[in-house]
Image (cartoon, rainbow, N blue to C red; front, side, top):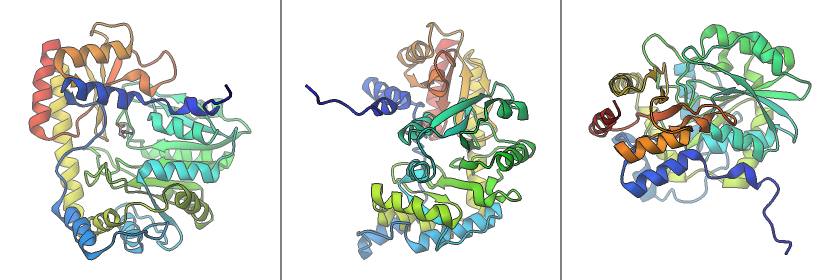
Length: 385
Ligand code: GLN
């Protein structure tokens, strides 16, 4: 029998985030594992999509996305991050930020290329590197500060290093990279001539005392930065799969060809819905989002402390890592399962965000939930205390 899976099949095992979601729905629990984000969607965005379906915008769009959406992205970038980009040549709309990342790696990385990743990491970044036969190289960040020094980067760089992934605000730690850390990464990227692949999907989930800076706006960084973000979290449309990559036209062209190859285009009417949202929802909307989520963060972190699961308070994103060493179990998975089966609240084992053998005494919770559900989760967790 010679039928067999490909040699790279091992890079796409079912993610632990999905495993926990499935187990959670099997027992009818509250899903704080997957970053589903089922908070209400703005009527403007819904209207933009439904009107487009009714008007007949139901066929393929340009493979790089509807021009009206690319224009809206360029305007939003300029207004909120000061980034200038050309909607004709420098933006590729893809099937979520995940699609944009996949196409970017396919376009810019060769087999064997090394890419520096901060750990704890978002597992899809690693699997997407593996799918391009690139090699992740890790720099570990430790709580509570999740900081690093230039020596940590110097230690892992080799002649094969081609890039670095910068996820800020970060999943799962909620770290917001400071201005001095960004400068340090910029100098390093310049010195070793590296691409910087950003994941800025949580750019508007940013809490008091912190600011999001788009890495591409640092002096000299535009041509080496692939800025990746999307509508999923900002507009509560995780299932719509609308994300994008912004970069120099030399890279965007081929990223676009890969996008065409894999997705043809992102869903047409949903692109229109997001374009309308971007055009019509202003600063109040984004600031309101940050305030709303900061309240959720505070409320949920207090509940974790009361339950004896000390949280590492996030500065951004909508996840929180908590220390669960007091929960029965010898691995992160056993502890997350214990929490799920005793309280009905699902989390993700910390080990999903680390290489083998680490993260066993932490779990990640997602607090992107409506307040009533979050309150119910908070009270259920108290059984552990
Ligand atoms: N980004 C979200 C998370 O970290 C969703 C992941 C997913 O379902 N792929 O949970």
